[in-house]
Amino acid sequence: MTDVLFYHLTESTLEEALPALLERSLDRGWRVVVQTGSEERRDALDAHLWTWRDDAFLAHGTELEPHVEHQPVVLMTGADNPNGAHIRFMVDGAEPPPLAAYERAVFMFDGHDAFQLEQAREHWKTIKAEGHPVTYWQQTPEKRWERKA
Image (cartoon, rainbow, N blue to C red; front, side, top):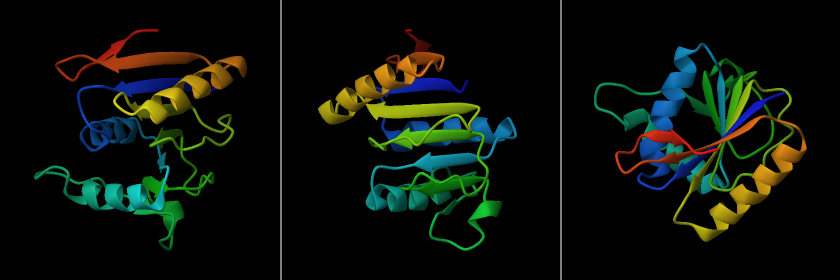
């Protein structure tokens, strides 16, 4: 079964938290898909990941580019897995595809957005009922992740 993690953003934005998690995934040798809830968010994350830190960038592409299968990180709105990703991030309320093909799935949701909170609760119930092991992580005031469930 796929390990499923829920990351509750309370102290930082997605743009602040996601790049470090993507780096850690790549350090493990995993390919990554980030599924966004909209094309606008996909495009904003695309621009952000090239410049998110002065001394680094995250090599990535979007589903619209040629040879996307060679990208270590793919940003997309659809349910495909064009680069054979090991881990899939769902952000901004993206509806997950079947998760059995992944080693890990991560739901990141904004704790200040009522819609995203409700969606995360519904996804939690569904994913747990499917038998996947699930864990819930919340940010501390220091922006560290603390396991809550």
